[in-house]
Amino acid sequence: MNRDIQLIVIGGSAGSLQVIFKIFKYIPAEFPVPFLIVLHRNVNFESALDELLSVKSNLKVKEVEEKETIESGYIYLCPADYHVLIEKDKTFALDYSEKIHHSRPSIDVVFKSASATFHEHLVGILLSGANADGGDGLKIIKDNGGLTIVQDPDESEVSYMPHHALQKFKADFVLESGKIGRFIFDLNARA
Amino acid sequence: MEINFGDKEIDNLLNDILDIYGYDFTEYSKASLTRRLHRLYLMDKFKSFGDFSARIQTDPVYFKHAVQEISVNVTEMLRDPYFYKTVREKIIPVLATYPFIRIWHAGCATGEEVYSMAILLKEAGLLQKSLLYGTDINPVVLEKARKGIFPISQMQQYSTNYLTSGGTNDFSSYYTANYNLAKFDESLSRRMVFSTHNLVSDSSFNSFQLIFCRNVLIYFEKDLQAKVLRVFDNSLELFGFLALGSKESLRFSSIAGSYKQVDPKEKIWKKLK
Image 1 (tube, rainbow over the protein chains, first blue to last red):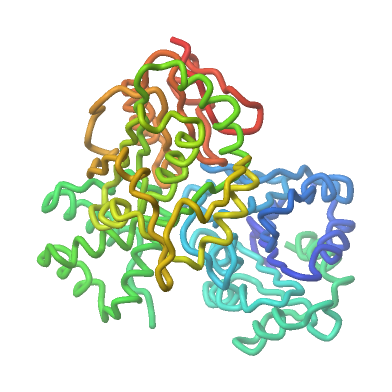
Image 2 (cartoon, helix red, strand yellow):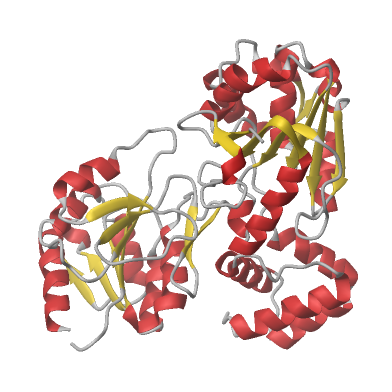
């Protein structure tokens, strides 16, 4: 494997939070690639996701702000009730347009936009969920030369979302939740 | 279907639109605008970018449709109820001290926020001495705003927002239900003026004690954001208030030094000089 990875995007819905915590156990503070996480969340539920993740990971955690430049050392979280897009100059843009798959933020929107900027330098990971979101976007990541990982539906808490994505295209890797973190760590070590 | 156009084609199209129609989208955030153009292209089933571009340039009726579809018109009543709670508790008591209240909702789309504010003013007994200006680039959405008719399917959500914002009446007392539509009371719309205004090219047109511009600046590039903030600064009376969207900020802007945020959480600033 010889690719220069510049961003890792993780999309998840129902049943994905514990998987995310597992992944970041393996990622050290000096990991050179930034992460962007897009989770379906309830707008009316004041989520403490950033605080929880700060405790459980070695990286700095922050919510995406518009016009902010993506930097390594960070886990960026998509804010509730906005779509997140990425400009060609690698800054974030926010968008309050129609929900996609009943979701804002939508995983498809983030995956597609990240792929248009990062092409083969992007890794897309789709986790557990009860929604059809993410599959189209992940396929585009693969079409543009990026690396795609889907959580194994057989051991996902809710298999619908990973299963739905795998019906659309053949992901590069289908991994159990406990193996994704180590895989990402190794991927970078090999690069 | 395949998308066969990228940044270069879009830049050319935006320059042509500016030349032909005088609408300037060149300083809109590219990521969002590109997504909207791709959406429009697929929705209207174009076969090539050449066809798409030619249609926009030669058919003014289609161009109007395109403007409507590429601008984001998503809005709701009393969105972010805690924001409106802050308006009730910290802004309305100050507005009450003025003999006449002028409010500008810039980029109001179909007007749900204007109706929200009118309800708050009515409950404070201030609506009769208030005038609410709603402006948007897009005349089609303003026509909807004037009518004050919204889908009844939204009312349950709006009613929840209303109660969370500190409302104590029955929210349904503000509208008349008719099949799947809710028509808002004319006592509200009587105090409203809707007109087209382009934040990119038009200047200040009045002075106000309160300006709302929520989730509009996120679609603009930095220089255009700064320009629009100067228009607001020129349109705001001393000690007036500027209210932005929950992810927007005056921080790092050239006018920041003249303003003070009135609440640690909500994005409302007071003009101090």
